[in-house]
Length: 393
Image (tube, rainbow, N blue to C red; front, side, top):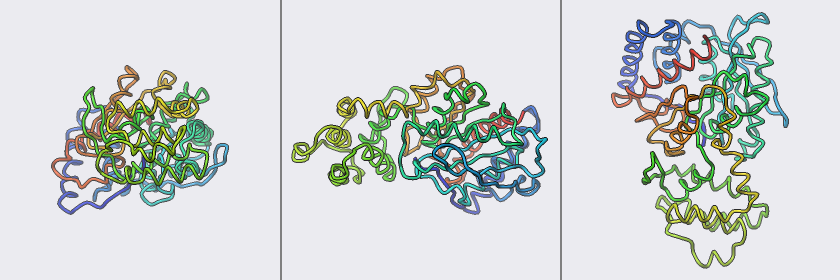
């Protein structure tokens, strides 16, 4: 659920990555039109992967970062304005949605990514969200993100008809729902969803049982311990009584902390639990997907409605913009099968669907680059090329 951040690469891997970028330049520039889009996309790959050669950082002035506010409740919004832009400029814009438990929006890794995108001639908005920072994903969150889009549309240097949304992890899912908001849906330039979930109930089943349904086949899946804790925290937040919440946390901690799949509930726990607390306990102790689905069926109407309100599959018909989907096969936060479900439901509106073979969840710069990652770097380039074209052309 968290926005991934960067790890330094070994010298050999960094040299290999430079070679990849050089190959992109040689192969891409003669055959991809327009040439400017191809070059900018290759340069952006170098920035996002934090390679030793970064043409944008070298040759394009740093944008100006302005801190403002947006929405109700009021939250912080950092806006990156390309150098030299003025009130006469009509520049494209993009909002970055970082997801649950994100890094602070002024963290060096966040500013590096936003700065790199802004150097393309794009006004970049990075909204903070107090609820998401506090591990709260409420039905109001997509509308809050839409507020950020509206704020960027109103920025003096922005062309209001050329604003897109790029979400990461849970932020990708929220971005897809926000893009269906009637206040912004008709004018969205694009939506990019990297590593998002398709359906909240399905993700609960995946995390609880350590399994995933990918392309119609059930297979073992081992969610990251931090993700297991976050998903439990999100569910505990729906239990109104503090005492009941703390009691449930204590009973479920051994199941959530264990890397092994659950083997079923404990009878001595069940007799003490009632209502949604009991159903949540049954979910996180489910030994298989069938019993996990049965546990969810026991949720209250209110809880299931809440989960439905943060599930992109329920809002896809309202998304009119081209959608770009990106997901890693090795993702240990959200199974890649969610991207396949989204692609199937979105249909012809999918502009590009990329499945990384080696890159996992979040920022690809987390990976130690080497020969095995060359294919993913190329796929990242192609993905970014299409988004750069949608944004700047």
